[in-house]
Length: 176
Figure 1 (cartoon, helix red, strand yellow):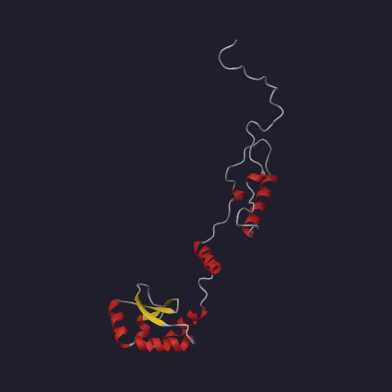
Figure 2 (figure 1 turned 30 degrees about the vertical axis):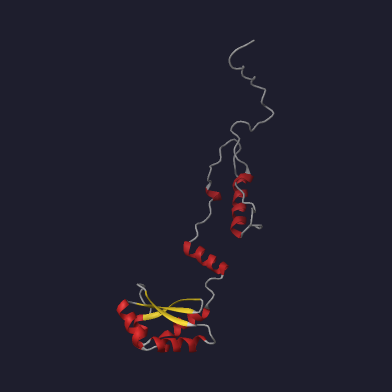
């Protein structure tokens, strides 16, 4: 009976598996595959797979592969573009009449109103009009709100706007 650790295997015993030591990742470790809810590859995934294939066509056997090779890195996308794509996919910004209202705003309301207020957002039949300050909001609510509401309802058409609400917003106005 022998105590201690077993002896090492001979030098030629593990030749059946050449990648047992130091074997680098292969092409499948870097390729994008459809998973879960994504059943098809996006154009960006296809471009990545093309670049990975190009990388592995030029790999020198025996040399290690970088964990994040430049060939597989994706070009950065502006965050604004990603947000815009997400909003389009969720159909959140589907109110083209609001853009038309913004363009027609100076002609719909009195000049003193268009200098301090602009249409902001529209949800559930309520149009939020952004005003530059709380003092102007108070003034518009007392003197012009009824005329603003009538002009917007006439512009928007059949029941699109139920109510106009005024809100203070610190964003600069485009009509100044």
